[in-house]
Image (cartoon, rainbow, N blue to C red; front, side, top):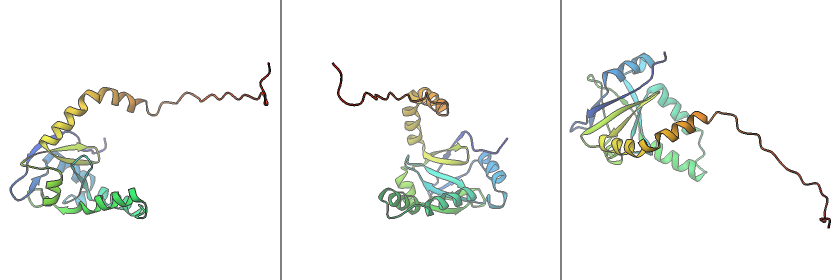
Length: 171
């Protein structure tokens, strides 16, 4: 089975803005990129989390940004917001990263945080933000799961009716 990040761990952000990467996520990180397991790409997301990515995944994210056109308003906005809140961070000897204070503020991080697995990456949320998001999504989960499961089903063919009467209606 492919190595992926799954589950969640409640963690504590220390007074210096450092948070540890849980051991089970570190083992996935080492399996995915053994030569770069001491480095994480981080960026904020629109849902006020910090996306924590193995270095090769972060490099792909940067390639996607480089393909954007800064002359298109939406693409420029994505570029400005994404790149200004992204960086490559080294893990210390205790497998902690030190988060940028502005990232902490934007994501409303306080001492209690949760790191959740999201297959190819991890996300770090303020515990209260994650709980609110989870509670909001819970009632919609079933319907959303059904829509996602059906997204690849073939659609009914579109039928067209062509009226070739040719002009004035007959009486």
